[in-house]
Structures are given as C-alpha cells and as structure tokens.
Amino acid sequence: MAGTKALPIHELPSSGPRGVANGALDADRDSSYSGVVMSLPSPQDPLATATDSSPRWLATCPEDTKDVLANELLSLGVAEQRPLYRGVAFEASLETGYRAHLFLRTASRIQRIVADLPASTAAELEAAAAAVRWPTWLRPDRPFTITPVLTDAASRSLGEAAVATALSNAIARGFAQSAAPAPRYAPDSEATYLVTLVAHLRAGICTLGLDTAGRALHKRGWRLPGHPAVLKETLAAAVLLLAGYDGSEPLLDPMCGSGTLVIEGAYIALGKAPLIHRGKDDFGFEHHAGFDRALWRKVSDQARAAKRQAPPAPLFASDIRPAFVELARKTALRARVERHIAFSTSAFQDISPPAPRGLLVANLPYGERIGRGETGALYRDVGRVLRERFSGWRAALLVPAEAPREALGLRPRREIPLMNGALEVQLLLVGE
Image (cartoon, rainbow, N blue to C red; front, side):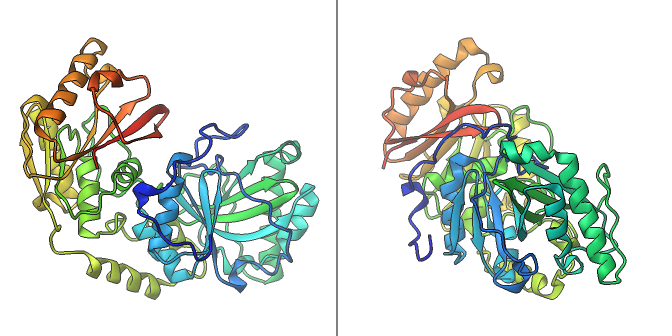
C-alpha cells in the first residue's frame, strides 16, 4: 500500500470475510491477538530485529473496520502498510508509532514487532530467540508474560506451553549473556505493570511482538457505568468515519444512551486525540526498555496543541429517558467535551431537526432494550420522522442484522456489515 492516496473513509470498500480463523479468538478482546492472521515473512537473522531499522508495528481491529483503520494510518502519514486478517501491519518511526497510540480511533490494540524467527521446533525457536538483544526490549524491573498464538496444525502441534517455555528460557539466556539482571517471567501474574510478549506462529515462523497498548484502546478513560447496552468506543468512531463525518456539519444522536456516539463525534470535530486522557504509565510501551519519555512528552504536547478550541459545527444529543441524558452529560464532562454538546430529553417521535442539514446517527434499540413487540413500531416511526422532517439530512443507522429493517421504509445508499461485540449488525447510510 506504499504511496496509496488516502480516500474519504466512507468511500472505502467494505471489509473481507466475516468468519473467525480456525481456533481463533475475538481479536478485539482485551488480552488477545488470536484473531490476527499474519503474512509469511522470511526467517531473518534474529539479531537483525526491528530495532535495527524502521520500527515495525501491528494494529489490530475487527475485520469489518480494517479499511477505516488503514485510512487512519494514511492520515498519520503511514504509507508503508500491509493488510492482514483483523489487522494492519505497518512501518513507522518511533514518533509516529507513539502518535498512533493517541490518534487511532478504531484500533483495538497495537504491537511493536521484535523479530521473525524460525520455529519449526521448540528447540529451534529457543535458539533463535536467545540471540535477540532482549535488554533493548525488556526492563529488569517489569515482569513479563507470553501469549502464544498458534494458527496452523504445525504450530499447534508444538503446544502453547512449549512455545512459552522456549521463549522464557531464551529471554533468560539472552539476559545472562549480557550480564544484566533478567525480568521475572510471570505467566499467571496480574501485576500492575505486566509486559506482554505475543508469539504468533504460522508455517514454521514465529513473529514476536510486544504489546504496546496496555489496556485495549477502546478504553479511552472516560466511560461511566449505568447503561445496559453500551457501544464500544472504537465501533462508535468507525460508524462516524464510515458515514463520512468530519465535524464540518451538525451532528445529532436522538437515542444517545450513554453518549458514546456523540462524544466520539465531538472528538472528531475537535481534532482531539481519543486516547489523550489516559493516565501516566497506562500504555504498554511506557514499561519497555528504550521508552523515550522525552519524545512521548513531545508527541503528547503536540496532540494537545492540535485540538481545536470549538467544533466547526454544533453537536446535539437526546434520549427519551432523563437518566440516560444525565449519564451522557456526565460522561461527556468526564471526556472534557460536555460544553460542546447540547443535551435534551425527548422521544425520537418528537424531535425536530436543529439545523437545515447535518448527520443524524443512531444505534437503534432492539430486543431486550425495548421489547421485541415494540421494535417494528419504533422502526416505522423512525422511518416516518426521517422522511417527513429530516429530508435535508443524512442518516447513519446501526441496526441488528435480524432487525425489521423493511419497517423503516428507507432506501439506504449503502449497507455495511459490522460486529457489535458478538452481534451482527448493519450500518445503513441514508441520503447523500
């Protein structure tokens, strides 16, 4: 994808296969990269690791939003990309890598690649891994754990325990050779500052990566409890970006719930880095050897300075339940964007457009949220209100794949399959 021109995200093609690789777990879980299918690199000299050239990274995401993530990377100036199943591999400087952790709205996690090693047997893997300069990657005072990801029959025949043992032994040997104290291997630890090494094995090759995210990247640091059906922040951002929202037009969420969509919208409109409010030592890379605190401070300061003072166009949010409106307001305050959003209490059937044109975005309730018998009636009301009052607006409606979409009476210009957790949903884009 080198030299690829960035497209408007809402014009990118929809993503590829929706299935999960054999034996894979959800790549969007907090602690797993198991859904990612790596390409087949050639085994290299284990001493020629990513520290010797431009750093290599891997950003993971649901497969259905991979194109959005790729375009986000392009906007950060990252042209050297390689799409993978449920992820995008890329090369970028340490500074750009740090910036990606602050600005990527749709990434689930990020790794920094350490090396690609031959791994036909556990002994071969241990010998190759022992030659890696581990003191340049791991700190003696930070315990580490190893997450093996075995994606084919050959790697599964080795077994997770053998892979973890081979790598932990290799790391101990590597530190012994350098006469440096070794970090503690803590496979079952819940230590506060636990470094995670991901070992992805396929076709006799082990790609080693250090988790640089720490907590999953949808955890922005501002969510409050209190809503039964929260939308993950990364999915909310993907919905807005797929709808072509850039903050230049009014945004309305008339079923705001806990406020995730409109808060993510405010961040986009302000050009605000979505992870800027994470606390000190919250990112994984802050606990790796070679962490450049001065560079990280520079990148963080630049991100804060780049934020607009006010959004170019207004943002509005409402809900039928006053308790949800108050929750959304408090959450927006915690996210430090409350003053940029106009909140109100209203049933969808009673709303009026707050501007002649704009984008209406909604995660339509369904099933247990409103009672299955009421879903059809609500969808008919939504379609009627949009046709009668919002003819000048575009709409982005997130609905379950099994929802009675025909009751809306709308003709979407595009339907995009997505996953909301384990639920298959469709993003319906209506209007120009």
